[in-house]
Amino acid sequence: MIPDPAALARIIIAMDYDQSGIATTYDEARALTSARRRHWQRLLSAHVDRTAISLVVDLGCGTGRFSELLASELGARVIGLDPSEKMIDQARLKPATSPVVFGRASAHELPLPDGCVDLVFMSQIYHHLPNPAAVARECWRVLRTGGYICIRTGTRENDVVVPNFFPWARAMLDADLPSSDEIRSNFASAGFMPRHHEIVTEVVAPDWPSFVRKSALRADSFLARLSDTEFDQGMAALRAHRANINLAEAVTEEIDWFVFTKRASPAARDLAPSARNSGAYSYKPRMPYRRLNHRRMLCNRGPVPSGSISFFTCGCRSSASTNSLWWCSHQAVKIASSC
Image 1 (spheres, rainbow, N blue to C red):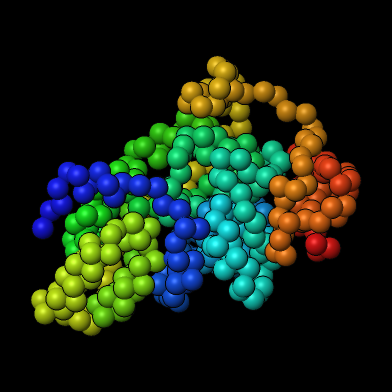
Image 2: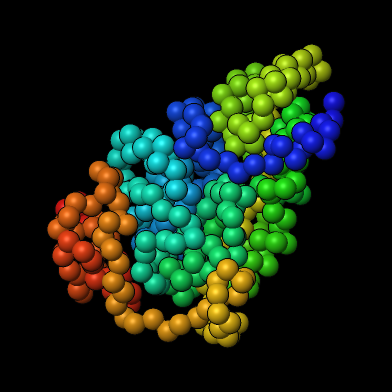
């Protein structure tokens, strides 16, 4: 059954993770199996020079399902950032097995100094970004020259299971998901060089019953935005499909994998019409030090208290005043253990 135009218009709404219960079921429904972990570890090692990585930002980290993998595979400190309070709270409940810290932040305004990050990782967040071009520019700002941006994302070209059983989700997929050309264009315009792109086929469930159980948890931004009736009808179709297939066969879906590197000084970014909102980047040479309000900074235990050092600190100069911190934008940033 194909939904009518009114239904299609109604379901194309933005996803707010803090207004849903996804955070409590996300890890159960979306956990990485050992095989999937090994697959993404291989892709990272194939396209990233781990000897050049010491600080990683897991942008849109959610509950941190890739954060620990990034830390262990790259031997780096990882800062997991996400705008959702509920998702970050779940991430902080996990035992700390590697140098990973979590905080709330918008991808459009990262609480980091210029040129301090070696790699930005984004998994399945691109379709949530209101202004992807602005986020690409912000990533360019915080990355060092030659730094990496790795993007794991669905695109409109991918072969996925959901719309075959939840037809009302098709409108959201078409409206929200980018094309691979759009992603390449946004990052090229922001000053990045393409290093690698491939469409990855990955196992999302070991068998059909497992896929049905995971889908029933509704820990997916597209399924979460359907009405209860639409969701129940889709689940009924999923269960009925068992009569037509080999139940033991693994369920696979496609996902795009992009790797870009930051160019040193792209001329397009030095031509500076006024506002970021216009789609053009307003470039201004930055002073060596930037002053930021310490209340924007977060550590694993929550907001940094007045008078304390943030977990972002600089090797050459810092101030522990109650109103501001001085950051160094030309030396490596390290994560302090005192917080």
